[in-house]
Length: 81
Length: 232
Image 1 (cartoon, each protein chain N blue to C red):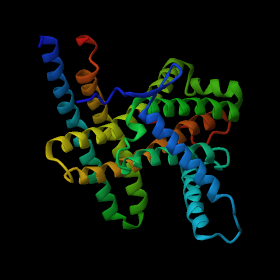
Image 2 (cartoon, rainbow over the protein chains, first blue to last red; image 1 turned 45 degrees about the vertical axis):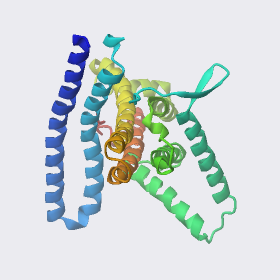
Image 3 (cartoon, rainbow over the protein chains, first blue to last red; image 1 turned 180 degrees about the vertical axis):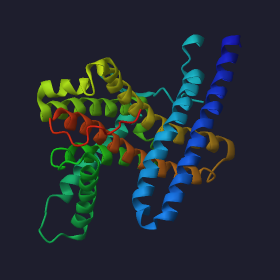
Image 4 (spheres, rainbow over the protein chains, first blue to last red; image 1 turned 90 degrees about the vertical axis):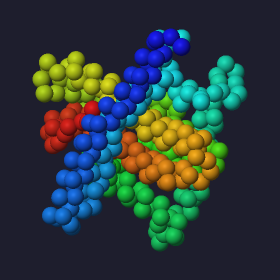
């Protein structure tokens, strides 16, 4: 195994692990804010939770990008061909 | 372990390789078209239970279009509704044993994102004419022209990667857990995958609506929601 493969594997792990931090914090904040809003205004729970789901999926996309980059590094690495 | 980014050809139709995802897509198309035909064959003013159920689906799509785009849904119902129903059924097709959702492969998602890209151009030109549509690229001021061009490409790409990444990661994780832990253990993950699939179908349809609404409403002179932000 040459050093390019080693670097690729390490950077795939780094991409996923560090890429998960931001979305995790952001999702926590989003859910907390939504809970707060529902507690204040329970009659708006439907709208809030619908918007929350869309927002969470948006935030999650950032983590998914990192996952795709990691999979590209592991499975479709142009440097290892 | 097989790469989630590649797909294996089942057979060749002339020079065109046909993968399992394409066959699944054909099956889903067949089911949807046949189902739609059978359900709408005998429509009555006093609906039967089946008709009422599907009218509920159409009504929900209509009200979502009305809420998100602030226009009457007549022109957009067919495209947005088909997009939602197809992605929803495709994501949930993993419920059938042995079937991998076609949206877990890059090609299907690329085709869907390309459809949205074309639909934005089509509906934009339809609503405001070619001049009006091109003017939306210079919408706040002409300095934004290159940025708007890049945005229309990158948002299509992010639509593709979002759907692909979400569905594929679900399938991938289930595969890993199945190989590590064995039978029946990945069932909670599969339930989570179903939830993700439904949410992603909804998100894809909502984003398509937002993009089309941006092109349609900015093309008109009396713009009502031109400052609607589009996500990255």
